[in-house]
Length: 102
Image 1 (spheres, rainbow, N blue to C red):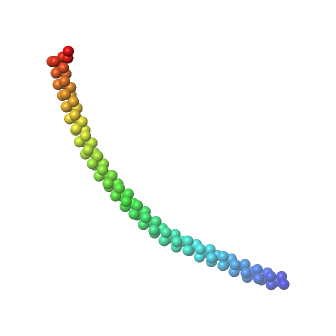
Image 2: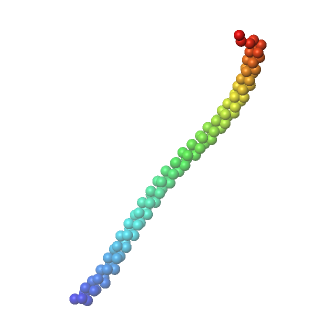
Image 3: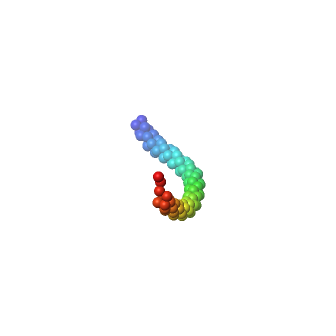
């Protein structure tokens, strides 16, 4: 009787191990396939986001160029304002010295 029990364990144990290994291999294969399809979708999403970022960077560069032009115009206007303010101050000084207040 002990012989038959040992023979059953000797046959069933490797068979159970083989079934376990095959099931784990199938689960791993399915996970790998799912990863591949998910990775493709994620790569597409990343590519789309990269294209959007590139567009935003180009728009920012154009805005930077416009800002630089506007700052140059502002600096010229400020220089002109400074000249006019100085001229107005000189004229005011000469008028107040020529016609003093009572």
